[in-house]
Length: 406
Image (cartoon, rainbow, N blue to C red; front, side, top):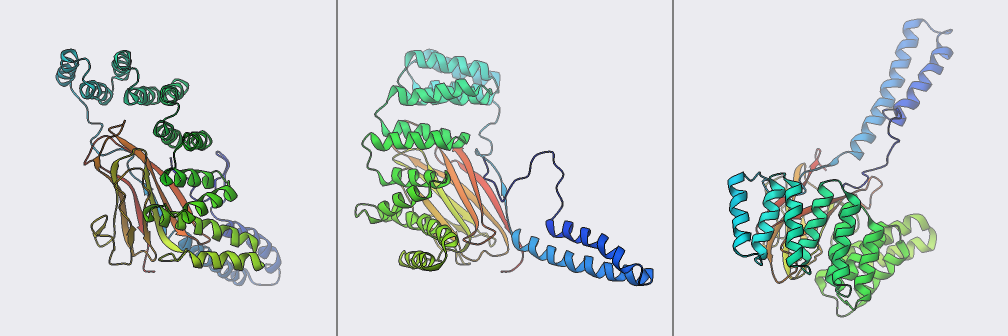
């Protein structure tokens, strides 16, 4: 799901190409009536052309400024992860399940194989049969939800996903897994409720606190988000891997509040931003955040700049001033990337499933949040879901094109 990149119009309603052009055309009609009686026709025409060209030049400049940074969403799953499986391969997968009905890996491979073969009804039956012999396995419960969702049966998908927390009502990781699915479906309010429940079940994980604060901010609960991020930063037990991204998000909130406040309040907020001591400040061409839904796992953010240089865990600084902050290897994230002044060309944003540890889920799914023109009037935010099925897989979630030299 891609966030609104800058305002929406009602579907089906004709809209002017640009307000400035629309304004110019209206003025042209008026000028015709004013100038024509007094000037020869060709003089009036020349005057009108000058006005039109001038307004078009202004409009062109504004559009270029707003569209210097553009994002194209790419994949939500790794290329080839949905390659078809033939009948012979399906038969082999079924035989493995028959040989050992309690083999979870064989069960998972069969359901995924049928899903890739686009035999969704058969995949659903296989998943249901799996659950009858392995009722408390969260993997098959979530698989059932995925299959219903792919079939377009949203109500059944929601009930299946909800079974994750019904099975383990006091397990914070179960609530977080459901929250991740809900976020990807666009239901932020329900995801917020699940994250609250995870916290109420005794989790003091500051990564959970970060995720909850982030969702609160996206829901417009600005004061709550501010309080939650401030608590993360002030907690002496917060790891720097979480504290610094929390500072980045808090600075964005301070800046929004400062623009609306003015006067002494704005000055105090500007002082608070400065005290956060952020590298690159709060105005950047590109900011990227990565989160995922599994604990004890290592998912990495990769960003390749226009020079072909990959900024990632073992090479954290790019030649154009880009920087990756931290490498979270214990699950959930966040990881963040900043390009204060993006170079002309293309930036490629990817997610790599480096390795998994002990977790209920073998796959990883989550979100990449991309902010273009951070802290500037033309700021745009995109939320890009992704899903990785196994270790060493990589998904390209977006390409960011930067026009011209900064």
